[in-house]
Length: 163
View (cartoon, rainbow, N blue to C red):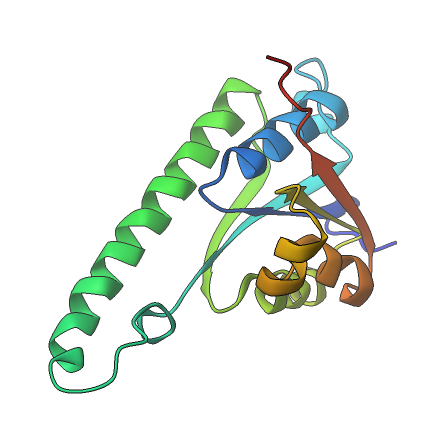
């Protein structure tokens, strides 16, 4: 078990999806209690994988160079908004021993690298709940991490809303 200052490290991957927000809140509700305060057994590292502007802009031809700085600026603003929301959740759940990171790259690789970098014993990711076909086409971050991360991987799935 990896530890920092006697605490195990928990990496939590976030994006701008409600699945990610649910996973963050669920984890804090089940593994952290306000009574523990700073006595929590985990040091938390919240990681957001920011896509690169070039990966978002897949256009070829003239004018791409002018668009990249605008796209990059928008991606940075989105990352700041996502981290800000995560900070608000941490405050509302009285979780204070948290490091926030924005790392450029594919979420699969970013999260597995964060596990290695921080010597994490747990990685938490949300599940979008894609079916087999969508998962095959889009890929699954949670599936990739479950097979590649060198720690326990907890996949938190949002309950279906009954209508």
